[in-house]
Amino acid sequence: MSEKEPAIKVLVVDDGRDNREFIVDYILKPNGFVPLLARDGAEGMEMVRKHHPDLILLDLQMPRMNGMQMLDALQAEGWDIPVILMTFHGSEEVAIEVYRKGVRDYVKKPYTVEEMLEAMERAMSEVRLRQDKEALTRRLLHANAMLNRRLRDLNMLYQIGKSVTGLMSLKQLLPRIVDAAVQVSNAEQGSLLLWEREQLVCRAMRTHVDSNAQPCYEFTDNPIALQVIQKGQSMRLGPEELERYRAQNPALPMAVACVPLRVRERVFGALCVENVSMSAAPFSPQNVSMLEMLSDYAAIAISNARNYAALQEATARQTETMRAAFERYVAPSVVERVLQNPEMLQLGGARREISVLFADLRGYTAFAEQAPPEEVVALLNEYFSLTMDVVFSREGTLDKFLGDGAMVFFNAPEEQPDHVYRAVDAALTLQHMLAEHNAARSNLGLAFGIGVHMGEAIVGNVGARQAMNYTAIGDTVNVAKRLQEHAQAGEVLISAAVVQRLGERVEVESVGAVPIKGRQQPIEAYRLLALG
Image (cartoon, rainbow, N blue to C red):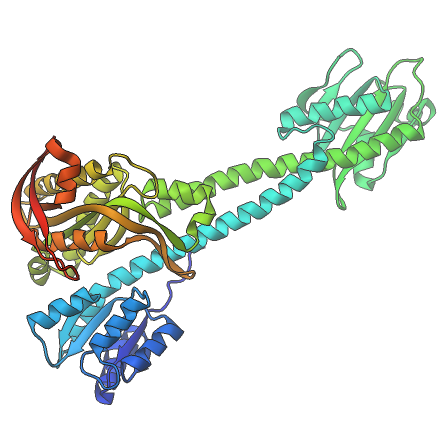
């Protein structure tokens, strides 16, 4: 059963009551959003900590704590929430500054309902993607918890059943039970019968001329076994007691002992032994007692084997379903690690060397302004699919989609000694494939600007237990992002560290120094021309 999509919570942080009321009455409530209100940044941070909103509409000029200060507070506390900035005062410098602080979009006051909804819709793509990933993570955790509980139950039953056979295959288990019954009762032959689909079926049999029991599937109307199953009581019959049954079946043996197979109060079969020789002695009460003890273990072993087979089939289907759904968002290597090791979903990270690739679609904004929304979404999905194909074919990890761009890293979670080469190869291949794709669509003029850098970063699950992402954090990530921002359409910029690692395998040309926010010294950047 599919989960109901949760309502999106939108926090409005604005010191103007009229603006807050306008947003709530004309934008949020009519479109099904859950509004949260704050009059300044300090109050906004309290609402963030308490309600964990999905989107923030943030005013720039406010008392006590303004918009810039709140953006700093969000970053300092590690909140990854899309923010749309609202302000009367706008400039290119302000836009650059707020985008670097995590703002997803920028709306100048006064704005129309349509302008705000368009900005929110752009930000919502990231929110919905995160919600999908969180829902899939919850399902995966629930599936693994259920699997672990059922496996514990099966292991407990198996410890009891293994004293009889230690087998989990019914085809092997049932004949072994018959052999054990013949042995403990000193009988000449035996059979195991199960009540299946309102019929009695002999599933394993050993005759007095056989050395071992064999599996079978034969319908029977054995009157003694039917009576044992119906009444749930053992029967011990000698020659005299069998006379009343012999008229219906002259081939009846000289002595019979038959006990029910039950789990709790449900009887689902019978275990019978027989003596057919004229000289054979009748079965004793001790023989029946031994059979009853064996039948207790046998019933549990049979139930165990049935449950195990059903669980294997259900688990295989469930695992494949979860794998198919989860692989839409993370690399297959991550999926396999999660399916095998649920502890991977715990919070935390580790320092390791990675290669980071940022790609951003140039020309998208102009195209989106002219094309119908349906065509824009379809085109964006095509480019995202192309990106995922290239990245996953090189076993990279897709960190996230950022509007019309993507962040990818290599060498995590699994070791990849050639991770730098993989990242550069992915970048170059992505440009080539995009060029071919555009040519097939009469060249829409869209191209990726790509930046690649390598170095140490913290890699792991970051966020809250209710909402976490497998991601990379650190200066290495920031440098790769800045390189992408300086790359032109169709251009791949790589750092000196990447060039040094690959050596003669890359053909590059210098583009000079690129300033990096937060660093005193710029870095040397190179335009990637070819990869050997």
